Image (cartoon, rainbow, N blue to C red; front, top):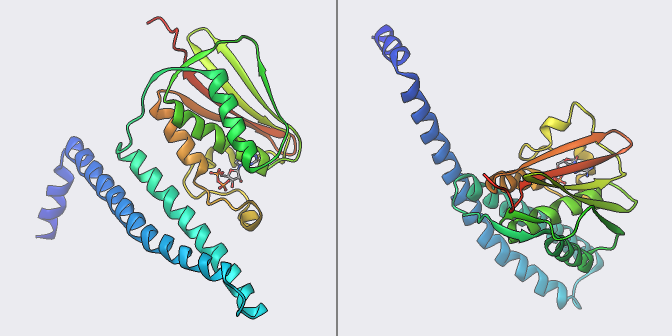
Length: 250
Ligand code: ADP
């Protein structure tokens, strides 16, 4: 009986096996989507209640204020984790549709920098060998990717950040360069994996959840491009996005 089952399953065609694996993966993504969505909603509500308690905190002792602050920090982190997990699951299940239309790069980059500067301060230099470069992309999503990469460059370095724009025949390269801590060569292939963080002990300082690069890469690939890292430990990192130029002639 056992032998029969084994033989039958071994005889299953590779195509059939692929279909089953696809189904399992789809179900897993669906489960993650539902789970993150169902948890995020009540936690956001609880966070709102905590904020209102914090605003009217006259009756709280110092100990209670401190406990509330810690609870709110953890809650915010968890909500961010759920939101990003949900984003990644939606992207992987193609529930989010990415456009591919001509986007003026100068405008998109300047807007991302302006948005970033509202929240944090850092010198950001844009270097471009030619003006009016246009890429095939989804403007909002490209801006989201740029914001994530700029935010990382600022988190993991102390000096000015450079954004280099280059037109390479049919392609456009956008490089976000920092002179920060850099990433060990062995770690570099892993940093695009969900929840991978090179130095987990820095979690508290940098505040990330380890999903930023995974989301950024899925977004860039969804726009038909690539996202790679070039980095040297102690020297800094370059995150390079390559997208099709909108003047590409096929
Ligand atoms: P997070 O920053 O939230 O931890 P990311 O997915 O954005 O998650 O990045 C994954 C890991 O890659 C980070 O934990 C960090 O170790 C490393 N990393 C990302 N960007 C940089 C950078 N510019 N310089 C050095 N390390 C980086």
